[in-house]
Image (cartoon, rainbow, N blue to C red; front, side):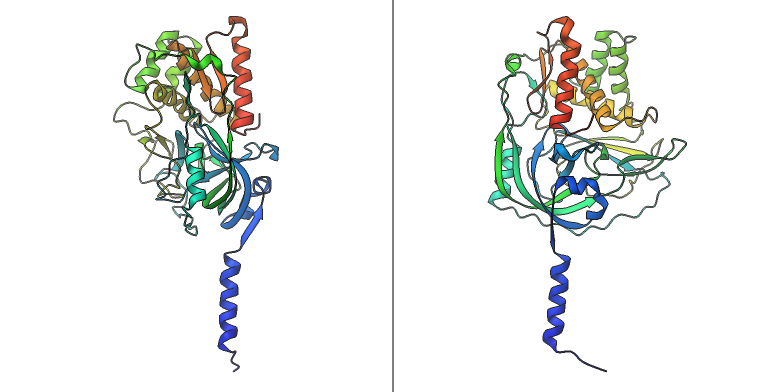
Length: 378
């Protein structure tokens, strides 16, 4: 039997620890090309972060992916301010026939230094202007980000050849993101103020009367304003009905608070059953969804719920968001709202548009917002 010096053993142990903690320099596009290859690794990436209505992302429009972004999450217990206003996390219900194993990730400890506090403060600073601007922040932020990368091959609701739900995967809103960065540190923080000056039409928009204090009931009222048999009325009623009736156990769980941290039950099956094996956990930030804004948000998320549970036709991430924003616009129209603006200063509705140009103006505004801000491929 041979022995090795103690100092050699210590050297090998230190080398092993350093190797396991090695930081991989990469890009958003390289991550999105093969998220699974980065799963569990600590990465360093330079990117631009944005927080909007249902976005909290690091993005790069040049990646040519269906979603050109990595979802950003703070570690559990961070209690910071920046993040999305509304989010749906898709979770396997207790009665879905998938393994109950939970992925074990290395815990991340966030460095809450001056740079992080600046980053979080900038991204959580709201744009102050007239009219309704859902999730509109004042800044995007470029920085160098370090954190644990979680990656999967497929994201969202996974169905078999017959259309039956077989599993769920992914991160962020609608669980459609194939990659997530759990933030460890941020540096080289550079703010970019968003230009809202072109959106002058939104400077005078009063709160609308006749809207119910119950945001789901408000969506039903909006449906009646168009006529429940009209296409617009049916679209709004469908969004309201997606939440189910009071006390109904349909797998839709509504909560209020922040959605910027990794969930406590991250990756695990739920403890409740649902009719189709899915739990749709909806979170709304009540501190930033005041008055009519909550009704618009509920109409938006209700459309997502209905679309996620409808196996046909299969919708892309772009189509899912387009449909949800169209319902949001219809909700605004029903209450005679003058304007509706999306994050980044994209005007989606203006009652002052000439009637003959309104549909084109809506389509153009949505296309610009979804591709340029939300980083979705059409």
